[in-house]
Length: 138
Image (cartoon, rainbow, N blue to C red):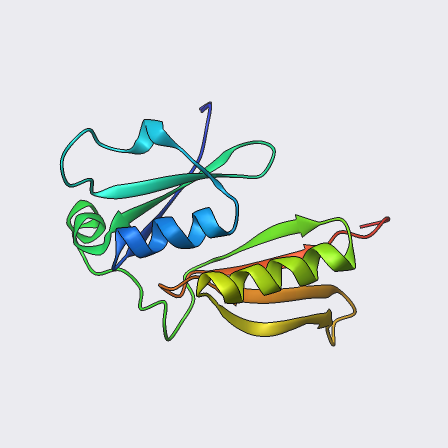
């Protein structure tokens, strides 16, 4: 079986807060995923050079579609996405921008115990990401 694209769907409590957070990080809105109504049920962004799409749905909308509850991301993880960085400064810049935009740092930007330079952050709804320095030979 072949498919053309894959994207992620996350549940959020507040679409306006989510839209502001990701815009403040400099991400580009995906307008094709937004409903044409007075009250959209999602906001959608492109990630990376390949334009990977993450849709952020109102929590009740995603629970309805899944016929069940979504994970409690404030107290656990359902997935963590990795964002590649080319320099230490770029990792540090992400960490600074996340804090200014209202996110939370879970691991400070530094060379971690596993030998890699990265930081781990969460958006206001608790969705986790890490920004990892991609070093030659990886």
